[in-house]
Image (tube, rainbow, N blue to C red):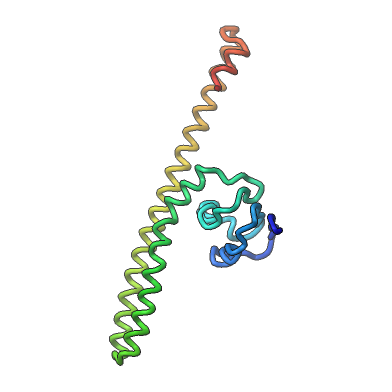
Length: 170
């Protein structure tokens, strides 16, 4: 049973290439370090959303929080895919029904514009979600740093014990 895949430095450069691994549902650990796809802003979220069966990515545990963020980012995109397929089928039907090339081109252009607008909106929402997450992480880091500094000073001044400092972190 295949439960781990290591594809380090293999030239994976897009989500399309990475998604070819989706049918391997029994895989629990995936390592794709040193590939271009890893540098994409939504890389971890994409993997968390598309590979629900994974428990570990590049040595890091896939958390519920990451899966929730991933769902928020990619759920709408999944709903758009059937619309694109439907547009392609409609295009083929128009062709079979004898519509002119100009009418088919106009329809294709209209579909392209709508798809582009939809993808721009998804990208914008994903970037916004990513920025909110980064701001929250920064806030948590500052809070931790403040707490550490406060208790370091209290320990240094003798106004707190080691036990007080440990209890404040719980």
